[in-house]
Image 1 (cartoon, one colour):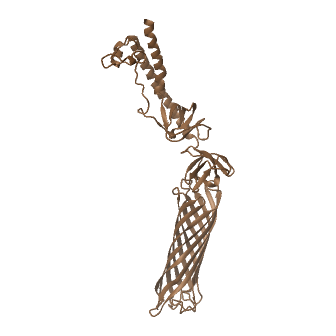
Image 2 (tube, rainbow, N blue to C red):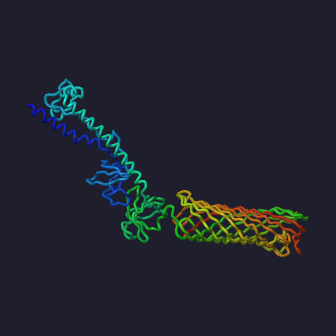
Image 3 (tube, helix red, strand yellow):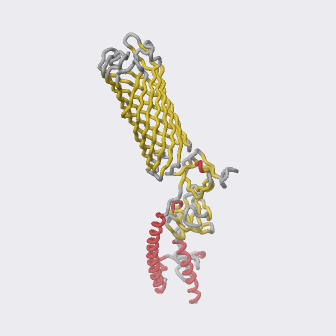
Length: 490
């Protein structure tokens, strides 16, 4: 009888030894479609894939990776792709100790255990179990508690090891990351644009580069777990600039021009204020090449056209006329830049160049049409400036600002219509451009421009027919421009 009593107890103890560790094992659940890798790391081979919501058993941990068992396979998953399963979601083992023949029978409504709960599968109340348990069993339980305490100490020690592994993992270089630069990009099974694409990714999607061949990249979508080949031209690498870049842009808009003239002369043309609006066109071409890790050097050429019709409205008190005019501005610059190597790809620029501008009055020699006797003019001189740009201020928005100053300029007026014998000029050009990344190699731009200049004349020009007869005069010119357009890079 003693053997029959002890045999079920031994089997029950063996069952607890086998079951309890499994019940206490950490379990996690995938938050999205997840790849199980052969080794820790995005570039390792894929063992299997599991769908979102799949529960996995954790075997080991290493930095930001977990070793799991799933689909009959063992592999590694990133911690960012799983979450810990809560206690409510984990099935609980509520059976404390199995009933055996001859033990307590308080499980039934009448104090007797139901027939189907008597024997090896039955469970008794904890209080009765404590009373019925032999002292030897209690001692065994105490020993088990001590073992559990030792296990806790071991786990704490393991945690310290994991911290060291985390530090090593953090020291590893980050994976190479690119973003989709076109509206929709196709991912192929092989580095060939043949057959049906296995997936499509939208602009701005982040991809991890696993391999690169001429014109193609093997990439992985960390969100969906898909991998395949994508054209290199369809992506750009974060924080990287091409070795050399050519860009052209064009914009259309309008400009508001104002002139304020003051002199020591007399008559209607001794002092006046003029305003006019003009249609504006701006074109720019640039070439930039990298020099070293953070330096850039290049050049740019800009051209601006302004056309005003009917032009400047002028009245002498008796007659009133509209005076049409056209402006041309050309700037040639050498530029040098310092790449800040930040997320916005920001660059600080220094600029030196030369400016040449023309202000052409229609029918300048016809004083009935040119009632104000305005001269046509040329403005020229060296410039120096600074600029800054952040092509990726946000995912799709870029910003560029610049300013140039002319300190030793010269203004030449139509012969016979000079405001003075000698002129000195100071001028400032400033502008800002906000761009929207429409395609990988094209942006849509909105630009604001500001021009200020001050010209001072001294002496009386021989034979001048301006009519104010002043020996000193000064004029300020201010222009505000607003233009919209596009830019394309090569």
